[in-house]
Length: 396
Image: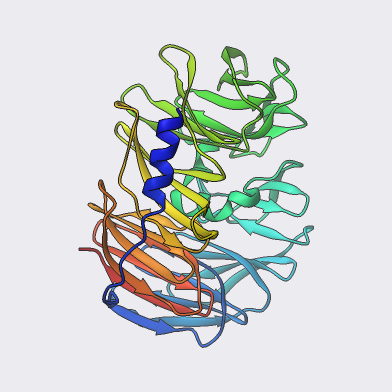
């Protein structure tokens, strides 16, 4: 274990050589600071201080702008944009930029998940979390437990917020008052509240027809239909600080984080195994076959600088591969193209790396700025910065 930890720190301490700046395919400015953004269909929708703007993903042209003050968050699909802010929730026609519906809300704050699911919006509020009708904007269900918490940026880019939803069964799962609760997406009514285990923390994660959640000293697997317990595994560590679960491999092994390292769970053997003790902050990002990619944020002992690195852990060989360190604390934005990884490893420094060895290919720099949004397909990406710069990038 100690040897592995030393390898991690040595890999992470390697610096990146300076290189020519990566030129974007297109770049435009909103003319004011941006507070949120979301891509859907052929456009990226950005929220600045006083307006919503739609920008063509292919050319970077502004399609429309809609005045809107005090924006908190955006959600979108190919036909509609949902905007929260100023104590209301609004719907904008994605083609014209016209507001088609407004609804006053009983919340001081509403942070939307980036897209509707089965015509429903998930949101975090100042009172916990909520399920809303995407058409009528009616609040269907409220929970006292948070939906995103501090993980909002990471969940937004990876889609992990959907991990609490079973679309086939039309159910969304919450941990409410320490118990697993299943809510019907259509009606917003509770289907069941499991009395089998209490004291659950964090948020539940759907895996097939089962639901996983953390109790203080164990990982619990519930039947997703009725809340009965299928199995439990004792967690050989204090309570995980980030119960964000990533699925990987043919046996769908699970990866999650505890204070000081990564844990893996093997559902076929119902066994938890500690793979790596890793200090400071670790965020699982993505599972790819037998590999788990994660973001590692640490203080370099050689110069006392905060640094960030993307690493790849092979579950098959239990070895670390690749590294991509940069000085500065990342906002956590990491996305994947077909053969590349794109990551903001320091504020305003967006690095393009090869997918497996994580060697730097290029760097796009936004001086004295940082990202608020990053999304990618196989061949292209779009980045939106805090200062209102929107850039389209071609992946190589």
